[in-house]
Image (cartoon, rainbow, N blue to C red; front, side, top):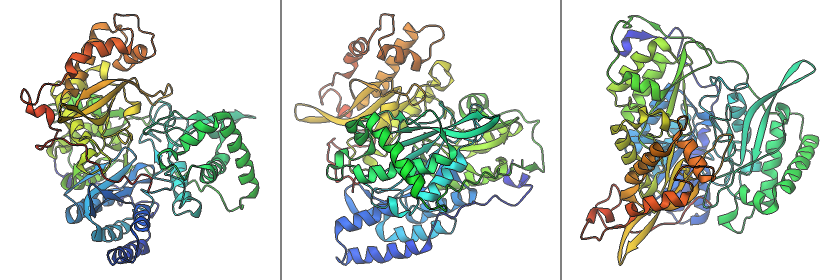
Length: 601
C-alpha cells in the first residue's frame, strides 16, 4: 500500500499555537558575530545561547546541540518534515527524541543555529528556553486525552502553562532550571519526580463536578534525587496558575544562587523542610491571588480537537497481517478510551531517528491518525494516536518498510539512554550506545513478549546527573570509571527498585557493574526473578519486595542479589580480554575526561 491509496477527509491539521519569534533568529546571528569578534564575553554568551536552546557540544565551542521544544509533546506532520530537512542540511542526518518531549539536533555549527531557528519559526516551533535557568519545556503524558483512567484531559492546561511562562520576565533568570509535568493518571506519568507535577482530579460540590489537580512539589532527579510532596488534597483549576506563580516566585527569591550543585528547588524543599515550604507556598499563593491583575489568567483552550478518520480509496483489509504483527501490537499499542481507536508507540533506539524516517512519520500521521498529529513521550519515543483498530495492520506494514516497526516500545526492552559521551561534556560513559546494545540483545531474546517483564524499566545515565532517569528505573545505571592497576574501564553503578507511579520511590544502590557486563547482569537478575517469583509477580513487584525487605524467598535483600551478581563483575586483565577495557562504540583506550557542564550556566 502506498500513500496514494489514502486521503484525508479534510485539510491537514495545523498547529493551534505559534511558539516562535522570527526576530530571535536574527538576534542570535548578530550575537554570534559579536562573540566571534571578542565583543561578547564567554560567560554572557553561554547564558544567551542556552536561553535560546543551543547547548554546548562535547569538547568544542564550534558546535552546538539545538533542542526544539514541543510543549505538551505535540508535533504536527509539517513540523516533522521541517526537522527532517534541518537535520539533513545542518546536523548529522538524524534527530534525537529526549525524555522531556523535545527533539535535539546534534553537531550543528554555531553559525548555523540562527538558520535553524529561522526555519523552525516557519512551522511555529521554537527552541527558546529549552535550556538555561528558566521554565523548561512543559510536559504532558502522551496518553492524556485518551487514557481510560484519567479524570479529564490535562493537555490544554499544559499548553496554557507553557504559553504563560514562555518568555515571561519572571522566569528569565531563575536560580536553576524549573520543570512542570502534567499527566493523565497515577500510572502514566512522573508527577512526583519533578519541580511541579500535576495529576487531574475532580470533586463534586452541590451536585456539580469541579475540575482540579493533585499537585506535587519538590521532586526531581540528579546527583541527589527526591520524590515530590503533595501540596494539598485538591487544587481547583482556577488556582493552578496562582499556585504555579507562587512556587516559581519562592524559588526565584530563596533558591541557592551561590552553590550551583545544590540550587534546584528540590534542595530548597529538603533543607527547609516540607511543612515550612508548604506553608510558604500557600501564603504566597494568597498574595498572588490578591495582587495579580484580572487579566492574568491561564488561558485554557478546552475546544476539543477534531477527530476524523482518513477515508481509504482502496481497502486491503483482506490481506494477511505481516510477520511480527501480533508481537508488535502487544508491545507497542494501547487501546484508547475512545471506542475502536488505539495509540501506537514507535520504538526508537535510545531516541534516535533518521531524517528519512522523520519524513515517513509525517506521511503516516496524515494517513492514519484521526487527530492529524503525534505526541512525544517520557521514554524517547513517539505516539501516533487515534489509529483505528482496522488500520493497525496497515500502519505496521508502512512502519516495517522504514525500519520503524521494532516491537517492545512499552516494555523493558526499550531502555532509556542519555546522550552520554557521544555529545555531553559531563558524561563518563557511552550510555547512549549501551542502551542500544541492551535493546538489540533483549529483542533478539524476545523479552518483549514476556508479560512478567512488561511493566519494568531500564534507564541508563552517562554520569550521576540522571539525564537518563536511572533513579526511577526498575534497573538503573549511571556511568563512571574504574581501573585495574593503570588500566581504566567503563563502569556503572546499578540501582534497583525505582519507580515513578503512585508508589514512587528512588532506586537503591546495589553494586558497580562494568559496562561489558551490564547485559549479563540484567539477564541474571531476570533469571533470579523467574526462579523465586510468586505466580502473580512481575519483575517490578518482585524487586520492590526485595528492596523494601518484604520478600520471603531465598532472596531476601539487596545484599543477597549483590552476592550472586558479584562474580559477574570481576574484571579480567587487559591481556585476557582487551575489549573489556573499551567503552561501547569506541576502539580507543577508555578515559574519564570531561568538559564544563552547562546545566547551571
